[in-house]
Image 1 (cartoon, rainbow, N blue to C red):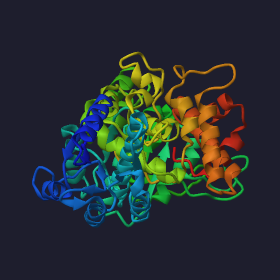
Image 2: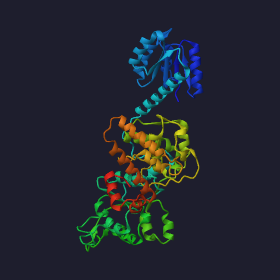
Image 3: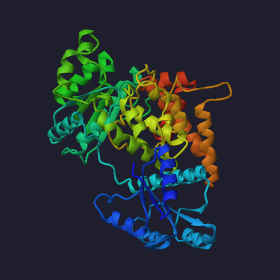
Image 4: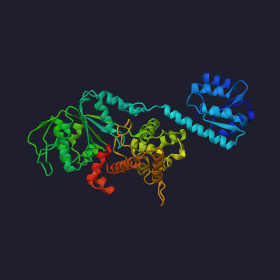
Length: 503
């Protein structure tokens, strides 16, 4: 953290403030006049400048008001606190109107002075975050060697039409790797079609993949193209391929072999020019040994295998991802981004993340609402992170938000995400829990902001978080998720479409 700069010709004032701020863990640097401050700013040592500037008005060798004007030109976001005797109150008011953060009348109450300076520090850190403009996010985020290997693999495979099998734990970002392979391929201007084979009931999956003719089964009132036809000329992403029913594996193998298939109820072969990218979190070799996955299909899919590392294998990427998700959460909620203290970030980096980057995203959503101040301290982290190494019952989400800039605009309500982020360790009492308190805080924030659509906004986020949590526990199976939520299959399907939930 950058130091607090104190400018005063009175040694006793400097001494008292230095000692008080150091007790609060705030580093300081002192000067006797404005000339020394400007000289320090021009030097290599002071190039980054202070976190906050606290300056007297009247000093030999320069005026605090002149210093304020110069500082505001060079560092417009820097909070400046002007100290003044009561006789200088008019000057202090003038300084305040000219851009000072606050004025501190002398003699001052030391605890109140420290409190004021800490508020200025928070303001400074908000400015730091604001300056980190959320430019168009890079396609994928990751500096760890394991992710660099993935990037190199994408680079080599993108121009090829070869089938790729992406493996990795749930929530590690498999679908977005598939998106990257498509985006950088010669098929980039053609469709990218994704289907989660574990999320669709067995009796409907065949029709979803290959389409059907009118009258092929009850309710088939018109012919319908399947995902293979929809992806013609482009890329078809088959997520959770390890859960595909055994009999459908035979049909898929045939399509991969010659590119031809039949719609359900059809008699004419359909040709589709499709590049297939498959993904699974399961051990397909073991599935083959168990007799639930065809060995010949496995070898057909396993032409090139791209393994996506778990987040715990690339801990150096946690700070970068956390900053991105905090900014993204703030954007969705229409609030200022929060910043994480170094101790909190270090603790977060030690967490095992059984839910991978999806869990990190949930934690950042939770912190955006639940952390009491703009700077997230160690004590503000969720209970399962503070437990550091205790078994965490959080389940991994299947949605591949991982190490990329997610494109979905369906904002999850952070307070509801706490249900998924801290399912068994969150302190819940008979009168309510942390998520209800967070919900109330969010409602109040929106109401105070003058919003007139609070009900719709919060209901949408709440429903999104509930459905995403249920889908994550059922690995994307909608019917089972609906049963767990106590709603009907049609209801969850309609809600997924209305909310734009990316499974």
